[in-house]
Image (cartoon, rainbow, N blue to C red):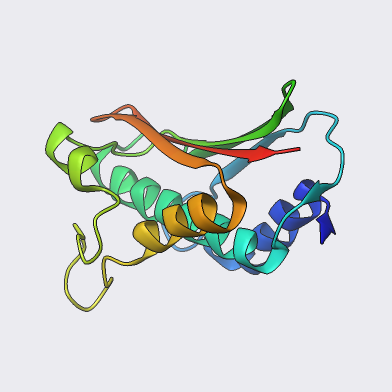
Length: 158
């Protein structure tokens, strides 16, 4: 099925809007969109939106942790899309707490989580990677630095 990637991103952000707004002492999370000119892509839109939901939810949680650590902190999520010669790239970057090398090494393992037992199952990122790899025949990668943030990169064929 052909899908508009930006429409999927926007609808996922709309669902998460309540988590992006300011609440109590927590500032609003700024979402900066830098959308490239993309064609519609043959994909599984519902599954891709599930991946996006997981990545955005994780970014929000990382930002919430960083808000606890810093007084003058402006939480941001950058979304950048671009068209390359053979693929579409979606970059989701946050300026949250980042990850240690140990966490990065285990990030996509099923049942691995850094969250308390009542907050996560450790399945979100392993399922996200499986969806991108098996259903879309492409890749989901991550780069992160402690206290500097995290970037997830999705590549989809055109």
